[in-house]
Image 1 (cartoon, rainbow, N blue to C red):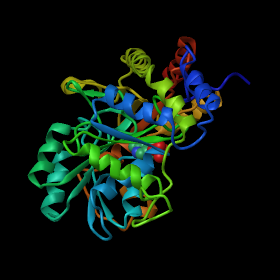
Image 2: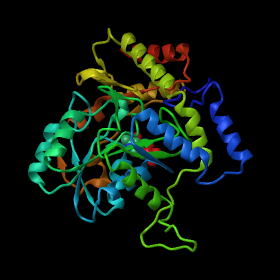
Image 3: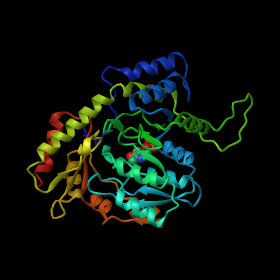
Image 4: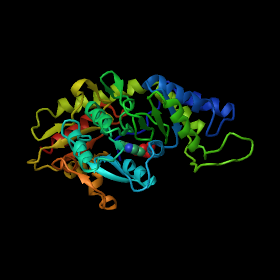
Amino acid sequence: MKDRIFLASPHMSEEGYEKSYIKEAFDTNWIAPLGANVDGLEKEFCQLSGNRAATALSSGTAALHLALKLAGAKPEEKVFCQSLTFSATANAILYTGAEPVFIDSDYETWNMSPAALERAFQKYPDCRIVVPVHLYGIAANMTEIQRICKAHDAVLIEDAAESLGTLYGNKYTGTFGDYGVFSFNGNKIITTSGGGILAGNKADAEERIQKARFWSTQSREPVRHYEHKELGYNYRMSNICAGIGRGQLRVLEKRVNQKRQIFEFYRDAFSEIDDIEMMPVDFGGQRCNCWLSVMTLKPESIVKPLDIMLALEQENIESRLVWKPMHLQPFFADYDYIDNCGIAEDLFNRGVCLPSDTKMSREQQIEVIEIVRGMF
Ligand SMILES: Cc1ncc(COP(=O)(O)O)c(C=O)c1O
């Protein structure tokens, strides 16, 4: 069988930066959830992303959980959450005992609709926490979402798990809200094999992020014996994973450019096929990281997303449907949903995530394109 073409697989630096950071950890025996790589990753991440403070954690989901805890999410209170996302965004809300209210998307950004968010505040004026997502690397409408959050005095948590490297204006996504959450899962634009970062950019970010760091290490008080006054978690990133992260950070910009080239190549190749539209990128002065290249099929197309997935799978090529919205998930069926003409559901019904692996060769991408073209 020929080599599998992946949706997005780990891509270590050609220079071997990751190995040198890991070697240093081995040589100094810092095989622990603390050490020079953890500190280095946090510092270098802040320098690169423009955040004031950051803490390295075991996953993006852990980062979401601690962001919600910092925001003071409490049992039974409502949290506004983008519906079109991966389940981790909504799960983290339930970890705190709070209840998600799902918000529909808009076609301009595929992310949280500001109009639906306004309506959500009309229905639940006491809501204090809002969680938009920058899906597939496309920035949400932060200008409007920030304005609405400010007007309602709400804490803004950006789920930037998929958008590291995306610029909105001249700032990175994940620096606009009170907290930015990033994932280094194996399929993300850069990876630590598994891990995440919780970052903050507000005036008190240093102190807030330090509190999350404290919770992430079992809330151990700084005294000689084991003293605990608060509930703790084992959420810290290991010094080995952080070493991979430091190496990967050095090639982030290169990976963004590669991902963008992959996207542009698909866009040009499919430009004559009326039934295919590519996801919206680079509108309103943003630079999308193009983590995944996603296309939608026109409603009238006789070719459906599943047909494309199956045709690719036959040639050992991985693709994926767009996230199934949270308000349609059986597990989340009891939570409220603020509709904006069913846009999240429509994108789920018509979208396909194409192979966007930076290790994919041009020839392999042409093979993907030919298979898709051949269906029309
Ligand atoms: C939008 C979104 N939020 C949160 C997460 C959770 O990140 P992690 O897998 O690192 O826990 C992911 C990805 O995995 C994601 O795609």
